[in-house]
Length: 75
Image (cartoon, rainbow, N blue to C red; front, side, top):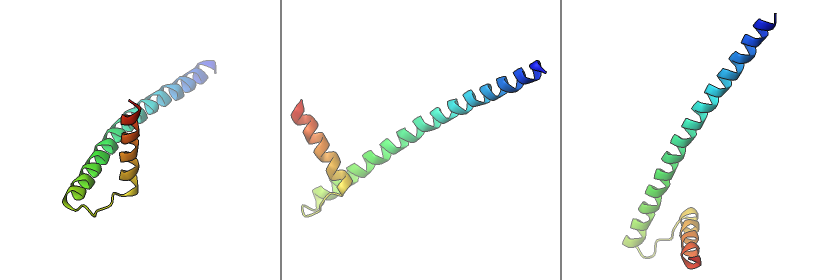
């Protein structure tokens, strides 16, 4: 009886560790993809601003520009 319980508990723990490992790998991949998409969106908005001086940045892009400017000021 104890051996059966030991096998069940060890199987659950091994399954949980494998699931957490795959979740961590998927999260890193998703973060990389999100970062690249954000950089591409920002570059697209910068190009639009260069072509048309009246163009206004989106709220997200404007927040990113302000954060970078503040970081440069604090350096």
